[in-house]
Image (cartoon, rainbow, N blue to C red):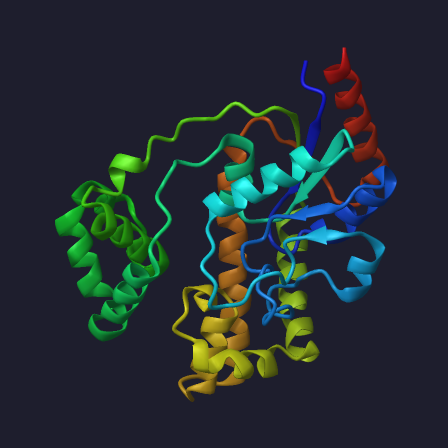
Length: 303
């Protein structure tokens, strides 16, 4: 019998994960293991809706503002660090919460053992990307790994560059490392998904973008503008504001694009989550119902 349990709380961006997660963490008196691939960067707390200082005072958080934009980080590194935290905690219950699908899957299912990229390889690929552009490096990927080239989002430079880094460093295709083998975990997993009516969710997303702008997201984007070529800034919110800072669009247009692209990302998240039938879905306001479900699952797993 597994003597530890991991509670996973996820859902689309803007659904209301943060407050609910704080309530669960306070109820069980446990820290939050954050699962957001952008909130780890200390320079961009506003645009990533990272937990505030007050929220972190309420509950201890791991993986919030603990890296810099220039740092190399990956789902594989995250998997190992989270497993170390879970194993080292004396409490029988751990709590993982966030919206980064690959990070959550890395912890729950494991991730392929892909080599860590050498700094010189990463630097070489970034220089090629900046000099030649996305279309040319996509052509290179087609040459080195035609199978993955057919699958990859060719508008996502981060994915294309990472695959090429693997190909160049190892002399093998990126595809050869993608076995998708589910790893056994020494803990039981309870998966909770949060959802809202689509109109309600979209309204929250639109308002949250406006709140971010009012809280200083433009100034935040301006501070990181010199680093705009970094993969860590290739994300919704900053891409649109960089266009505004370049004078290519108005602020109103940039805000509209952020709202639209965030809604699109939320749909993508929901499509990903729905493939996993282990999730039990709740409205975020149903805290008592959610806690009762957790208690029932804990009792069942202890038998």
